[in-house]
Image: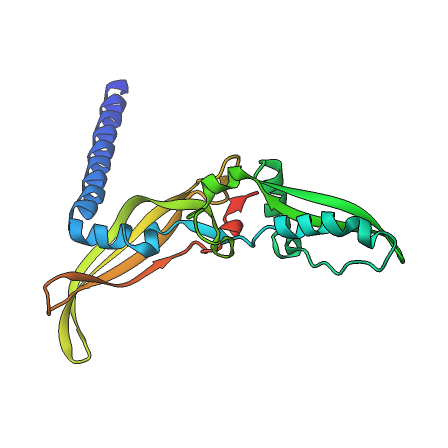
Length: 228
């Protein structure tokens, strides 16, 4: 009786191994069936490879300097009208930048005719430049690089022909899974895996594959993807 049970278990184990190997072959073939030209077009193109960024406002170093020069002159007078860019930055992000020495928020008290007023000024440190897409452009175009997309696997492929505008065309569609890695220190991604799909078509004019569309289910607003 025990011999029969052991034989049955052995058969089940062999069946499981065969099914698992067959599954791996299918998954592997899905990826191998995608021409390199199409992979490059989809995963090295600007839509997938573009870093996730947050548009930063310019800091207030110049305003702060002016304020310090004017502080004695305005002491006890009418309050200075000041709208800080701090109001335009996500609070969690601001706290993150300050705690990671990428920015400082300097607060100054000033006696005015209507009482004491606090004036806050944002100033970035040199450390933040290491995490900008391009630190050499005007600060009005600064983009903080949150992270980048990394392909996990291609989960489905389909090559087919269809008519578009009355002309028969060749298409190649894929679905895939990917994840996002943080490029900022002390920051983790909220979700481990995302799904996407893309479709390319063969241009009859030059015989090259062209991107038709690509859908990614992560938001382009990086601040909502990461744990700040």
